[in-house]
Image (cartoon, rainbow, N blue to C red; front, side, top):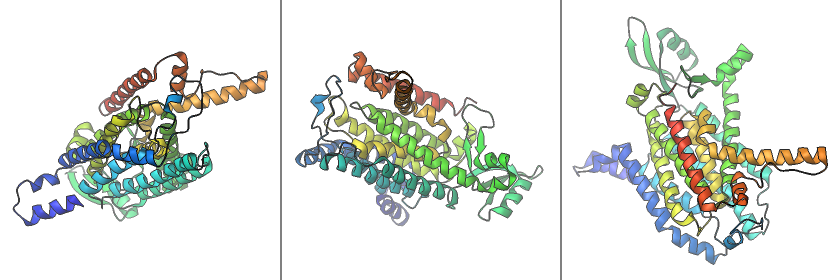
Length: 420
């Protein structure tokens, strides 16, 4: 879009300054500022529109402090976030890049699932919203799309050092594999670019895991079908993180702030993984074509920070499932793209603990009801943020402390780039 226009001007005119558009860092800043402007500037108009349409949150009285005061607050505010992500990305990114168009499709896909869920809750007055099986079906469908694209698309490759013998053996199986450079002609060591099911293992030396090798340990005949395992992993991660973000979205600014922290970490990973110099320096996997993803993550970060303008306590709008399902799913997809999905339990630790608190509460309640005839609880209420509300903490203090924990987990995640 705008990138292609300025790129054309740079090639065909002598207009000064147009060459800046070629720099990923410059376009990322433009995307970040653009998304921030859209989410803050357009936010008020969208909120007024939602109020006119009477798109208000239905509140179930759980006995929480200040809960009923939120009744009627506009929901579906995730539309603000989605617009603030899509518009700058379309303007400043190379939309023919496989990672960019896959992220754009995923954003719209997840937004539609969340929008349908919110629509049923608000306009059909059905508090359960979209049936869980249909949500899961949508997430499974997206997982299949993401998994198959990341494995089969010719532009999704990694670049690594290997012996010429290994390179020739792999070239016989993968016709798209190319030898990019020769490191040592004497020792027959080359740099090859090829398709791979490898992912990064945090805190471990020689920190790579191949999904094909996992199946090879079971049976050599299954080694070539590692992509099937990989697709199942994609489906599971997308569904788990998407639902984790959805559960976390229970206090003003909680899911928005935590997601902004996580996306900032993913932006760093995308930048260093897509830059040959930093990938070599940090001894991490170099992923060609990955740099463009930084622009998308920059737009996400700007959209989330801008949305906090309206979503912090007391919230003027809620993101609803339109926003939370989209954010969680995109975080999972980007983590898969930068091959850092094994870091999700640390990076998305807030989402994980919120999910676990619900699972523990429900499981223990059912167990004690069968055993003692009366259900008992581990927490005063789940998810965990409601437990602290019941204890007596104000929600702004809970949100602030969860943000602090999120920053700590983010720093721990970034440390894995060097600590192995």
